[in-house]
Length: 507
Image (cartoon, rainbow, N blue to C red; front, side, top):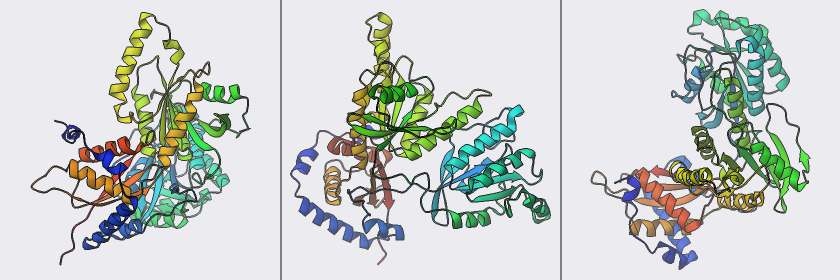
Protein backbone atom coordinates (compact mmCIF):
# COMPACT_ATOMS: atom_id res chain seq x y z
CA UNK A 1 0.00 0.00 0.00
CA UNK A 2 1.41 3.42 -0.95
CA UNK A 3 1.65 6.24 1.57
CA UNK A 4 -1.08 8.15 -0.26
CA UNK A 5 -3.45 5.18 -0.40
CA UNK A 6 -3.14 4.79 3.36
CA UNK A 7 -4.93 8.12 3.82
CA UNK A 8 -7.61 7.66 1.19
CA UNK A 9 -10.16 6.79 3.87
CA UNK A 10 -13.76 6.64 2.80
CA UNK A 11 -16.11 9.46 1.93
CA UNK A 12 -16.20 12.06 4.68
CA UNK A 13 -18.52 14.85 5.78
CA UNK A 14 -15.81 17.52 5.61
CA UNK A 15 -17.45 19.69 2.94
CA UNK A 16 -20.83 19.69 4.71
CA UNK A 17 -19.34 20.49 8.10
CA UNK A 18 -17.23 23.36 6.75
CA UNK A 19 -20.20 24.73 4.78
CA UNK A 20 -22.12 25.06 8.06
CA UNK A 21 -19.15 26.70 9.81
CA UNK A 22 -19.77 29.64 12.13
CA UNK A 23 -16.78 31.76 11.05
CA UNK A 24 -16.74 33.93 14.17
CA UNK A 25 -16.69 30.84 16.40
CA UNK A 26 -13.98 29.29 14.21
CA UNK A 27 -11.79 32.39 14.65
CA UNK A 28 -12.25 32.22 18.44
CA UNK A 29 -11.24 28.55 18.47
CA UNK A 30 -8.21 29.27 16.30
CA UNK A 31 -7.19 32.05 18.71
CA UNK A 32 -7.39 29.56 21.60
CA UNK A 33 -5.23 27.09 19.66
CA UNK A 34 -2.73 29.83 18.90
CA UNK A 35 -2.60 30.78 22.62
CA UNK A 36 -2.00 27.14 23.59
CA UNK A 37 1.28 27.24 21.61
CA UNK A 38 2.75 29.19 24.55
CA UNK A 39 3.15 25.80 26.24
CA UNK A 40 5.67 24.82 23.56
CA UNK A 41 9.26 25.79 22.83
CA UNK A 42 8.87 28.36 20.06
CA UNK A 43 11.60 30.02 18.04
CA UNK A 44 11.95 33.73 17.23
CA UNK A 45 10.67 33.27 13.67
CA UNK A 46 7.54 31.54 15.03
CA UNK A 47 6.58 34.71 16.89
CA UNK A 48 6.81 36.76 13.69
CA UNK A 49 4.63 34.27 11.85
CA UNK A 50 2.04 34.07 14.63
CA UNK A 51 1.87 37.86 14.88
CA UNK A 52 0.21 37.80 11.46
CA UNK A 53 1.28 38.80 7.99
CA UNK A 54 1.35 42.17 6.32
CA UNK A 55 -1.18 42.38 3.54
CA UNK A 56 -1.36 44.61 0.53
CA UNK A 57 -4.37 46.87 0.02
CA UNK A 58 -6.18 44.11 -1.84
CA UNK A 59 -5.67 41.59 0.96
CA UNK A 60 -2.87 39.76 -0.84
CA UNK A 61 0.60 39.40 0.62
CA UNK A 62 3.35 40.31 -1.83
CA UNK A 63 6.55 38.40 -1.18
CA UNK A 64 9.63 40.32 -2.31
CA UNK A 65 11.96 38.52 -4.69
CA UNK A 66 15.20 37.44 -3.02
CA UNK A 67 18.29 39.44 -4.01
CA UNK A 68 20.41 37.69 -6.64
CA UNK A 69 24.15 36.97 -6.40
CA UNK A 70 25.71 35.79 -9.69
CA UNK A 71 29.03 33.97 -9.94
CA UNK A 72 30.87 34.61 -13.22
CA UNK A 73 34.28 33.78 -14.63
CA UNK A 74 35.96 31.74 -17.33
CA UNK A 75 35.82 27.92 -17.24
CA UNK A 76 37.75 25.96 -14.62
CA UNK A 77 38.41 28.79 -12.18
CA UNK A 78 36.33 27.10 -9.45
CA UNK A 79 32.88 28.70 -9.80
CA UNK A 80 30.94 25.51 -9.01
CA UNK A 81 33.20 24.72 -6.07
CA UNK A 82 32.45 28.18 -4.70
CA UNK A 83 28.70 27.59 -5.19
CA UNK A 84 28.93 24.37 -3.17
CA UNK A 85 30.94 26.08 -0.44
CA UNK A 86 28.40 28.93 -0.12
CA UNK A 87 25.48 26.49 -0.10
CA UNK A 88 27.23 24.25 2.43
CA UNK A 89 26.34 21.19 0.37
CA UNK A 90 27.37 19.54 -2.87
CA UNK A 91 24.81 20.77 -5.42
CA UNK A 92 26.75 22.02 -8.42
CA UNK A 93 28.78 19.43 -10.34
CA UNK A 94 32.53 19.88 -9.86
CA UNK A 95 35.04 18.20 -12.17
CA UNK A 96 38.43 19.09 -13.56
CA UNK A 97 36.96 19.11 -17.08
CA UNK A 98 36.01 22.67 -18.04
CA UNK A 99 32.33 23.07 -18.81
CA UNK A 100 30.66 20.12 -17.09
CA UNK A 101 26.91 20.69 -17.56
CA UNK A 102 24.15 20.66 -14.95
CA UNK A 103 20.44 21.25 -15.13
CA UNK A 104 20.15 23.69 -12.24
CA UNK A 105 21.58 27.20 -12.43
CA UNK A 106 19.77 28.92 -9.55
CA UNK A 107 19.96 27.95 -5.88
CA UNK A 108 18.60 29.37 -2.62
CA UNK A 109 21.37 30.33 -0.17
CA UNK A 110 21.65 31.96 3.25
CA UNK A 111 24.39 33.73 5.20
CA UNK A 112 24.08 35.57 8.53
CA UNK A 113 20.28 35.20 8.36
CA UNK A 114 20.22 36.88 4.92
CA UNK A 115 18.59 34.76 2.21
CA UNK A 116 19.47 35.21 -1.45
CA UNK A 117 19.39 33.44 -4.82
CA UNK A 118 22.72 32.21 -6.11
CA UNK A 119 23.16 32.01 -9.90
CA UNK A 120 25.93 29.66 -11.01
CA UNK A 121 27.11 30.43 -14.53
CA UNK A 122 29.61 27.58 -14.63
CA UNK A 123 29.09 24.26 -16.25
CA UNK A 124 28.90 24.67 -19.99
CA UNK A 125 31.52 24.27 -22.64
CA UNK A 126 32.08 27.35 -24.77
CA UNK A 127 33.42 27.03 -28.27
CA UNK A 128 37.16 27.17 -27.65
CA UNK A 129 37.71 29.39 -30.68
CA UNK A 130 35.28 31.97 -29.37
CA UNK A 131 35.99 31.66 -25.66
CA UNK A 132 36.19 35.43 -25.09
CA UNK A 133 32.84 35.97 -26.78
CA UNK A 134 31.20 33.03 -25.00
CA UNK A 135 32.38 33.96 -21.52
CA UNK A 136 31.42 37.58 -22.14
CA UNK A 137 27.91 36.58 -23.25
CA UNK A 138 27.57 34.34 -20.19
CA UNK A 139 28.66 37.20 -17.94
CA UNK A 140 26.20 39.57 -19.61
CA UNK A 141 23.24 37.27 -18.88
CA UNK A 142 24.33 36.88 -15.27
CA UNK A 143 24.94 40.60 -14.80
CA UNK A 144 21.44 41.32 -16.15
CA UNK A 145 19.99 38.97 -13.52
CA UNK A 146 22.17 39.96 -10.59
CA UNK A 147 22.14 42.50 -7.79
CA UNK A 148 25.71 41.57 -6.80
CA UNK A 149 28.38 39.84 -8.93
CA UNK A 150 31.19 37.58 -7.72
CA UNK A 151 33.88 37.56 -10.41
CA UNK A 152 36.08 34.49 -9.89
CA UNK A 153 39.68 34.44 -11.15
CA UNK A 154 42.22 31.63 -10.78
CA UNK A 155 44.86 33.51 -8.79
CA UNK A 156 47.50 30.88 -9.52
CA UNK A 157 47.12 31.48 -13.26
CA UNK A 158 46.62 35.23 -13.00
CA UNK A 159 44.42 37.50 -15.12
CA UNK A 160 43.98 36.42 -18.74
CA UNK A 161 42.74 38.41 -21.75
CA UNK A 162 39.33 36.75 -21.23
CA UNK A 163 39.25 38.01 -17.64
CA UNK A 164 40.08 41.53 -18.80
CA UNK A 165 37.28 41.34 -21.38
CA UNK A 166 34.76 40.48 -18.63
CA UNK A 167 36.16 43.24 -16.39
CA UNK A 168 35.17 45.84 -19.00
CA UNK A 169 31.59 44.53 -18.90
CA UNK A 170 31.52 44.54 -15.12
CA UNK A 171 32.73 48.14 -14.93
CA UNK A 172 29.93 49.22 -17.29
CA UNK A 173 27.26 47.42 -15.23
CA UNK A 174 27.70 49.72 -12.21
CA UNK A 175 26.64 46.83 -9.98
CA UNK A 176 28.59 45.83 -6.86
CA UNK A 177 31.38 43.46 -7.96
CA UNK A 178 33.60 41.34 -5.72
CA UNK A 179 36.86 40.13 -7.25
CA UNK A 180 37.35 36.60 -5.92
CA UNK A 181 40.96 35.36 -6.11
CA UNK A 182 40.41 31.60 -5.94
CA UNK A 183 42.83 28.71 -5.25
CA UNK A 184 44.74 30.59 -2.52
CA UNK A 185 45.10 27.57 -0.24
CA UNK A 186 47.45 29.13 2.35
CA UNK A 187 49.04 32.44 3.38
CA UNK A 188 52.19 31.82 1.31
CA UNK A 189 50.11 32.16 -1.89
CA UNK A 190 48.46 35.48 -0.96
CA UNK A 191 50.92 37.60 -3.02
CA UNK A 192 49.38 35.90 -6.09
CA UNK A 193 46.01 37.43 -5.13
CA UNK A 194 47.54 40.87 -4.59
CA UNK A 195 48.71 40.85 -8.22
CA UNK A 196 45.04 41.06 -9.28
CA UNK A 197 44.72 44.65 -8.02
CA UNK A 198 45.77 45.71 -11.53
CA UNK A 199 42.41 44.51 -12.93
CA UNK A 200 40.95 47.71 -11.51
CA UNK A 201 38.03 46.09 -9.67
CA UNK A 202 39.29 46.99 -6.21
CA UNK A 203 40.57 44.67 -3.52
CA UNK A 204 40.91 41.00 -4.46
CA UNK A 205 39.36 38.61 -1.90
CA UNK A 206 41.69 35.61 -1.51
CA UNK A 207 39.74 32.36 -1.05
CA UNK A 208 40.07 28.63 -1.45
CA UNK A 209 36.64 27.41 -2.58
CA UNK A 210 37.72 23.77 -2.16
CA UNK A 211 39.00 24.19 1.42
CA UNK A 212 36.70 27.04 2.48
CA UNK A 213 39.51 29.42 3.37
CA UNK A 214 38.39 33.08 3.20
CA UNK A 215 34.83 32.32 1.99
CA UNK A 216 33.16 33.40 5.25
CA UNK A 217 34.99 36.76 5.15
CA UNK A 218 33.89 37.21 1.52
CA UNK A 219 30.23 36.49 2.37
CA UNK A 220 30.36 38.90 5.32
CA UNK A 221 31.23 41.65 2.83
CA UNK A 222 28.67 40.51 0.25
CA UNK A 223 25.69 40.66 2.63
CA UNK A 224 26.63 44.26 3.55
CA UNK A 225 25.79 45.41 0.02
CA UNK A 226 22.90 43.03 -0.75
CA UNK A 227 19.61 44.90 -1.29
CA UNK A 228 16.57 43.73 0.66
CA UNK A 229 14.65 43.04 -2.55
CA UNK A 230 16.02 42.02 -5.93
CA UNK A 231 15.95 44.74 -8.57
CA UNK A 232 14.69 41.96 -10.85
CA UNK A 233 11.72 41.44 -8.57
CA UNK A 234 10.76 45.10 -8.22
CA UNK A 235 7.84 44.76 -10.54
CA UNK A 236 4.84 46.98 -10.30
CA UNK A 237 2.21 45.23 -8.17
CA UNK A 238 -0.60 46.82 -10.14
CA UNK A 239 -0.76 46.78 -13.90
CA UNK A 240 -0.97 43.86 -16.32
CA UNK A 241 -0.44 40.39 -14.90
CA UNK A 242 2.85 38.89 -16.05
CA UNK A 243 2.83 35.66 -18.08
CA UNK A 244 5.92 33.62 -19.01
CA UNK A 245 5.58 31.42 -22.09
CA UNK A 246 7.82 28.39 -21.61
CA UNK A 247 8.57 25.26 -23.61
CA UNK A 248 11.26 23.45 -25.50
CA UNK A 249 12.17 24.64 -29.03
CA UNK A 250 9.64 24.37 -31.84
CA UNK A 251 6.61 23.75 -29.65
CA UNK A 252 5.13 27.06 -30.79
CA UNK A 253 5.94 29.56 -28.03
CA UNK A 254 6.79 32.45 -30.33
CA UNK A 255 3.86 31.60 -32.62
CA UNK A 256 1.57 31.77 -29.62
CA UNK A 257 2.92 35.18 -28.62
CA UNK A 258 2.82 36.52 -32.19
CA UNK A 259 -0.71 35.26 -32.80
CA UNK A 260 -1.93 36.70 -29.50
CA UNK A 261 -0.37 40.06 -30.36
CA UNK A 262 -0.92 40.10 -34.12
CA UNK A 263 -4.44 38.81 -34.35
CA UNK A 264 -5.75 41.29 -31.81
CA UNK A 265 -3.72 44.08 -33.49
CA UNK A 266 -3.34 45.87 -30.18
CA UNK A 267 0.27 45.43 -29.17
CA UNK A 268 0.53 48.46 -26.93
CA UNK A 269 4.25 48.32 -26.36
CA UNK A 270 7.23 46.20 -27.24
CA UNK A 271 10.13 46.51 -24.84
CA UNK A 272 13.45 46.33 -26.64
CA UNK A 273 14.72 42.77 -26.53
CA UNK A 274 18.21 41.58 -27.34
CA UNK A 275 19.47 38.10 -28.06
CA UNK A 276 19.92 37.52 -24.35
CA UNK A 277 16.75 39.15 -22.98
CA UNK A 278 13.26 37.76 -22.97
CA UNK A 279 11.00 40.00 -25.05
CA UNK A 280 8.12 41.57 -23.13
CA UNK A 281 4.96 42.51 -24.98
CA UNK A 282 1.79 44.11 -23.72
CA UNK A 283 -1.09 42.29 -25.36
CA UNK A 284 -4.86 42.62 -25.07
CA UNK A 285 -6.64 39.30 -24.75
CA UNK A 286 -10.13 38.72 -23.40
CA UNK A 287 -10.71 42.42 -22.87
CA UNK A 288 -7.73 42.99 -20.57
CA UNK A 289 -4.02 43.69 -20.85
CA UNK A 290 -1.39 41.04 -20.18
CA UNK A 291 2.38 41.30 -20.16
CA UNK A 292 3.77 38.30 -22.04
CA UNK A 293 7.39 37.23 -21.61
CA UNK A 294 8.66 34.98 -24.40
CA UNK A 295 11.77 32.92 -23.70
CA UNK A 296 14.23 30.85 -25.64
CA UNK A 297 13.44 27.14 -25.44
CA UNK A 298 15.38 24.67 -23.39
CA UNK A 299 16.86 22.10 -25.73
CA UNK A 300 18.57 18.79 -25.19
CA UNK A 301 22.19 19.32 -24.24
CA UNK A 302 24.32 18.50 -27.25
CA UNK A 303 28.04 19.09 -27.71
CA UNK A 304 28.71 22.67 -28.87
CA UNK A 305 25.08 23.65 -28.27
CA UNK A 306 25.68 23.77 -24.54
CA UNK A 307 26.33 27.48 -24.48
CA UNK A 308 22.99 28.21 -26.13
CA UNK A 309 21.22 25.74 -23.80
CA UNK A 310 22.77 27.37 -20.82
CA UNK A 311 21.59 30.84 -21.84
CA UNK A 312 18.14 29.37 -22.45
CA UNK A 313 17.89 27.99 -18.93
CA UNK A 314 19.18 31.26 -17.50
CA UNK A 315 16.60 33.16 -19.54
CA UNK A 316 13.90 30.80 -18.33
CA UNK A 317 14.93 31.47 -14.72
CA UNK A 318 14.88 35.20 -15.45
CA UNK A 319 11.43 35.00 -17.05
CA UNK A 320 10.04 33.04 -14.10
CA UNK A 321 11.51 35.62 -11.68
CA UNK A 322 9.54 38.30 -13.53
CA UNK A 323 6.37 36.29 -14.11
CA UNK A 324 3.36 35.49 -11.97
CA UNK A 325 1.98 32.66 -14.09
CA UNK A 326 3.70 30.34 -16.56
CA UNK A 327 2.10 28.88 -19.67
CA UNK A 328 4.02 25.69 -20.49
CA UNK A 329 3.48 24.87 -24.17
CA UNK A 330 3.50 21.17 -25.12
CA UNK A 331 3.44 19.83 -28.68
CA UNK A 332 0.61 17.28 -28.82
CA UNK A 333 2.10 15.64 -31.93
CA UNK A 334 5.17 14.61 -29.90
CA UNK A 335 5.39 12.41 -26.78
CA UNK A 336 5.79 14.27 -23.47
CA UNK A 337 9.57 14.50 -23.09
CA UNK A 338 12.02 14.73 -20.22
CA UNK A 339 12.65 18.37 -21.22
CA UNK A 340 8.91 19.11 -20.95
CA UNK A 341 8.86 17.64 -17.44
CA UNK A 342 12.03 19.56 -16.47
CA UNK A 343 10.40 22.83 -17.54
CA UNK A 344 7.27 22.05 -15.50
CA UNK A 345 9.51 21.25 -12.52
CA UNK A 346 11.23 24.65 -12.93
CA UNK A 347 7.81 26.32 -12.66
CA UNK A 348 6.91 24.28 -9.57
CA UNK A 349 10.26 25.15 -7.93
CA UNK A 350 9.68 28.84 -8.67
CA UNK A 351 6.25 28.69 -6.99
CA UNK A 352 4.51 30.36 -9.95
CA UNK A 353 0.97 29.63 -11.10
CA UNK A 354 0.76 27.15 -13.99
CA UNK A 355 -1.34 26.67 -17.13
CA UNK A 356 -0.57 23.91 -19.63
CA UNK A 357 -1.25 24.69 -23.31
CA UNK A 358 -1.46 21.70 -25.63
CA UNK A 359 -0.43 23.20 -28.96
CA UNK A 360 -0.91 21.96 -32.57
CA UNK A 361 -4.24 20.44 -31.56
CA UNK A 362 -5.60 21.15 -35.05
CA UNK A 363 -3.26 18.45 -36.40
CA UNK A 364 -5.07 15.79 -34.34
CA UNK A 365 -8.53 16.67 -35.63
CA UNK A 366 -8.41 14.35 -38.64
CA UNK A 367 -9.97 10.99 -37.95
CA UNK A 368 -7.30 8.92 -39.61
CA UNK A 369 -5.87 6.00 -37.66
CA UNK A 370 -2.57 7.72 -36.85
CA UNK A 371 -4.30 10.67 -35.18
CA UNK A 372 -6.75 8.46 -33.29
CA UNK A 373 -3.78 6.48 -31.91
CA UNK A 374 -1.91 9.68 -31.00
CA UNK A 375 -4.94 11.05 -29.11
CA UNK A 376 -5.23 7.80 -27.18
CA UNK A 377 -1.52 7.77 -26.30
CA UNK A 378 -1.63 11.45 -25.36
CA UNK A 379 -4.35 10.85 -22.75
CA UNK A 380 -2.28 8.00 -21.31
CA UNK A 381 0.86 10.21 -21.22
CA UNK A 382 -1.06 12.97 -19.44
CA UNK A 383 -2.38 10.51 -16.84
CA UNK A 384 1.06 9.01 -16.21
CA UNK A 385 3.66 11.74 -16.81
CA UNK A 386 1.64 14.77 -15.69
CA UNK A 387 -0.16 13.17 -12.75
CA UNK A 388 1.64 15.56 -10.34
CA UNK A 389 0.11 18.63 -12.05
CA UNK A 390 -3.47 17.47 -12.65
CA UNK A 391 -4.49 20.69 -10.86
CA UNK A 392 -3.13 22.87 -13.70
CA UNK A 393 -5.77 24.20 -16.14
CA UNK A 394 -5.41 22.52 -19.52
CA UNK A 395 -6.08 24.37 -22.78
CA UNK A 396 -6.07 22.82 -26.27
CA UNK A 397 -4.95 25.41 -28.83
CA UNK A 398 -3.41 25.99 -32.23
CA UNK A 399 -0.88 28.82 -32.04
CA UNK A 400 -0.48 28.70 -35.85
CA UNK A 401 -4.15 29.34 -36.63
CA UNK A 402 -5.10 31.09 -33.39
CA UNK A 403 -7.84 28.50 -32.76
CA UNK A 404 -9.12 28.49 -29.15
CA UNK A 405 -6.53 31.05 -28.10
CA UNK A 406 -9.28 32.89 -26.18
CA UNK A 407 -9.50 29.87 -23.85
CA UNK A 408 -6.16 30.90 -22.38
CA UNK A 409 -7.77 33.89 -20.66
CA UNK A 410 -10.13 32.09 -18.23
CA UNK A 411 -7.35 29.56 -17.54
CA UNK A 412 -4.90 32.35 -16.67
CA UNK A 413 -7.49 34.15 -14.54
CA UNK A 414 -8.37 30.96 -12.66
CA UNK A 415 -4.70 30.15 -11.96
CA UNK A 416 -3.90 33.67 -10.76
CA UNK A 417 -7.00 33.84 -8.53
CA UNK A 418 -5.92 30.56 -6.90
CA UNK A 419 -2.33 31.82 -6.59
CA UNK A 420 -3.64 34.88 -4.71
CA UNK A 421 -6.13 32.94 -2.55
CA UNK A 422 -5.99 33.12 1.24
CA UNK A 423 -7.93 30.93 3.70
CA UNK A 424 -8.76 32.69 6.99
CA UNK A 425 -6.99 31.19 10.00
CA UNK A 426 -10.23 30.17 11.70
CA UNK A 427 -11.49 28.35 8.62
CA UNK A 428 -8.11 26.64 8.04
CA UNK A 429 -7.92 25.31 11.61
CA UNK A 430 -11.52 24.11 11.42
CA UNK A 431 -10.54 22.26 8.22
CA UNK A 432 -7.54 20.69 9.97
CA UNK A 433 -9.46 19.59 13.07
CA UNK A 434 -12.30 18.04 11.04
CA UNK A 435 -9.81 16.35 8.69
CA UNK A 436 -7.76 14.86 11.54
CA UNK A 437 -10.94 13.72 13.34
CA UNK A 438 -12.08 11.77 10.28
CA UNK A 439 -8.62 10.68 9.02
CA UNK A 440 -6.14 10.61 11.95
CA UNK A 441 -2.42 10.37 11.24
CA UNK A 442 -1.18 6.77 11.73
CA UNK A 443 0.77 5.89 14.88
CA UNK A 444 4.51 5.67 14.13
CA UNK A 445 6.89 4.08 16.64
CA UNK A 446 4.24 4.18 19.35
CA UNK A 447 3.61 7.91 18.83
CA UNK A 448 0.99 9.81 16.92
CA UNK A 449 2.03 13.32 15.80
CA UNK A 450 -0.58 15.99 16.49
CA UNK A 451 -1.27 19.19 14.59
CA UNK A 452 -1.35 21.95 17.20
CA UNK A 453 -2.17 24.92 14.97
CA UNK A 454 -2.06 25.91 11.33
CA UNK A 455 -1.90 29.19 9.46
CA UNK A 456 -1.49 30.38 5.89
CA UNK A 457 1.86 32.12 6.03
CA UNK A 458 1.66 33.67 2.56
CA UNK A 459 0.10 33.66 -0.86
CA UNK A 460 1.80 33.55 -4.27
CA UNK A 461 1.95 30.53 -3.94
CA UNK A 462 -0.40 29.64 -1.07
CA UNK A 463 1.95 28.50 1.72
CA UNK A 464 0.66 26.87 4.89
CA UNK A 465 2.58 26.25 8.10
CA UNK A 466 1.57 23.50 10.52
CA UNK A 467 2.85 23.49 14.11
CA UNK A 468 3.08 19.82 15.09
CA UNK A 469 4.34 17.56 17.89
CA UNK A 470 6.18 15.32 15.42
CA UNK A 471 6.94 14.84 11.73
CA UNK A 472 3.95 14.17 9.51
CA UNK A 473 4.43 11.49 6.87
CA UNK A 474 4.98 12.94 3.36
CA UNK A 475 1.92 10.98 2.25
CA UNK A 476 -0.21 12.61 4.95
CA UNK A 477 1.01 16.07 3.91
CA UNK A 478 0.04 15.27 0.30
CA UNK A 479 -3.35 14.12 1.59
CA UNK A 480 -3.82 17.50 3.32
CA UNK A 481 -2.86 19.27 0.07
CA UNK A 482 -5.28 17.18 -1.96
CA UNK A 483 -8.21 17.82 0.41
CA UNK A 484 -7.37 21.55 0.43
CA UNK A 485 -7.65 21.53 -3.37
CA UNK A 486 -10.88 19.56 -3.35
CA UNK A 487 -12.53 21.92 -0.86
CA UNK A 488 -11.05 25.31 -1.76
CA UNK A 489 -10.12 24.98 -5.43
CA UNK A 490 -6.53 26.18 -5.80
CA UNK A 491 -6.72 25.25 -9.48
CA UNK A 492 -3.57 26.29 -11.28
CA UNK A 493 -1.30 26.96 -8.30
CA UNK A 494 1.19 24.87 -6.38
CA UNK A 495 0.41 24.56 -2.65
CA UNK A 496 3.22 24.47 -0.09
CA UNK A 497 2.66 22.77 3.29
CA UNK A 498 5.54 23.28 5.74
CA UNK A 499 5.90 21.81 9.24
CA UNK A 500 7.37 23.23 12.40
CA UNK A 501 7.87 20.45 14.95
CA UNK A 502 7.83 21.92 18.47
CA UNK A 503 8.33 20.26 21.85
CA UNK A 504 6.39 21.00 25.02
CA UNK A 505 8.22 23.21 27.51
CA UNK A 506 9.80 21.42 30.43
CA UNK A 507 8.02 22.33 33.63
